[in-house]
Each structure stands twice: as structure tokens, then as C-alpha cells.
Amino acid sequence: MKLFFFKKALQDILNNRFLNTVTVTTIALSVLIVSSFTLFFYNANELLDTWKKGIRALVYLDPTADDANRLDLKYNIQKLAGVSEARFISRKEAMAQMKVQMGRQASLLEGLESNPLPDAFEVRLKPASQTMAEIEKLSRAIEALPHIDKVEYGQQWIEKFTSIINVFKFVGYAMGGLFLVAALFIVANTVRLVLYSRQEEIAIMRLVGATDKFIKTPFYIQGLTLGGLGGMIGIAGLFIAFHFISEKFRNSLSAELLDIHFLGLEMIAGFIVGSMLIGWVGCYVSLKQFLKS
Image (cartoon, rainbow, N blue to C red):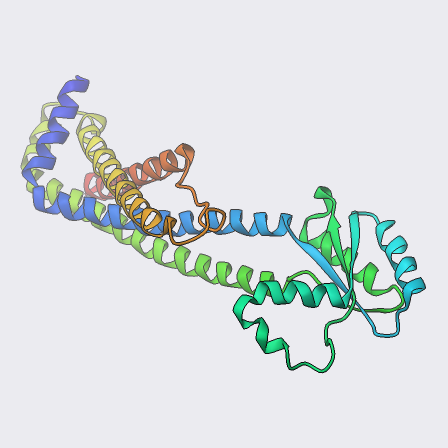
């Protein structure tokens, strides 16, 4: 009996190639768009977490701080909860580091009459304190100490990057939702057209005692098949694009910056199952309306 249902579903798919091709293509595009944004969010969040773990706070001192003040500050900073190490960087050392980083452009600093850089402490954090909430709390505690001018840990850049990710999330969810609704609509209408083309056949099946379950099963298999095909094509398209882009830019960017990963097996399975569910729901809606009438 199961083999009969599968044969019937395959026959319906082959008999309505154009409509089913449109259905599979729409589902594939939906999955491709949603999975693309998911892949971006996945890697962007991993990259952001990595940067957060490597955050080091720079504590700038005011010009009035003398050697005794610096010793007191180092002691007071290091005893704060969450601080692993506080290393003093003199303005002279900071200028030397800047010249090394600027390379050939270091000659631009030759005309400076005095060193404009302040003395500072480079504060390293314990792993448990490398969250934004803990960093902000620690930053406020350090700023409350005497002779502290400013504390920086890249908070503005991280906030901007997080805002950009949130905007992409909204756009991704909106576009994905629209395509999913379109896929449901197309699946439902494809099945409805097939049902109307077989209206007399279904009426005869009912007259000879066929149950609704017997009539529905091939259509549900058809919906699941179309959804599964669309999901696999969408994921395959994403993988090809991911492989092409990652290979193209892997040599031009540093390995750390381009340490991106494809979706895990659980996510891939989730997208394929979700696309099959879309196909099933589209069939369910059409069958429910048709069999009622």
C-alpha cells in the first residue's frame, strides 16, 4: 500500500512538471535566503564573541599622575574583581609602538614638538569577566579611581557592529518570512490545481469507499517531497556560494579574520525538515478546503 502511495505521488509530480518546478524553485529560494542570513548571523556572532574574549581595556591617566600615583593605581586596578593583569605603558613606549604600527608613515610624527600620547595601563581580564556586562561594570569601577582620565575597550565599535547585525536580522527575517508565505501559497495552489484536475477521479474513489486518508496520503507525500527537494537545492546553492566566496578571499585576508564556518548538520537538517513542513502545510490547507466542498 505504501508503495502505491509513493507511485501515485511521483506520478502527480511528473504530470505537473511546470507547476511543481515553480513550487520547488520558490521553496529553494526561501531556504537559500533564510539560510544565507542564518549563516551570516552564525559567523558574525562567533566573530563578535571572539573579539569580546580578546578585549583589553586601555586606562588613560591624566597628566597630573606621578610615579607614586601610578603605583597606587596599578595596585588598586589589579585588586579589582575580574582583572588578570595591569601593565603600565608610558607615553614614550606608546609613541614607539605607534611608529612601528605606522611603518613608512612614521615620518609624519617627526614634526611633533612633544609627545601627545598619555600614560596608560593595559588591563587584561579574566575569562569569566569577558562579557559586555562585566566589562562595563569594571570600566565604571576603574573610572572612579583618582587620576583616571578615560577607559576604552572598543565599546562604541562593538555597539555599532551589534546594531548592524540586528538590522540584518530584521531584514533577513522579513525577507525570509515573505518568501515562506509565498512558498506556502504556491504549494497550496499547485495541489489545488491537481485536485481540480482529478476531481472526477476523487469522486469515483469516494463512491467506491475510499477514505479521506487514502485520498490525502499521496498528496501529503507529494508536498513533503517537493519541500524536501526545495530545501536540499537551497542548501546546496548556499554551500556552493559559500565555498566559492571563502576560497576567493581566503588568501587575501588573514586566517583569523576569515575563520568562517558553514552551517552545522543540525541546522542543515532543520532547514530541510522545515521546508518539508512547508510542503506538508500547503497540501493540508488545500486538501482541507477541497474535501469540505
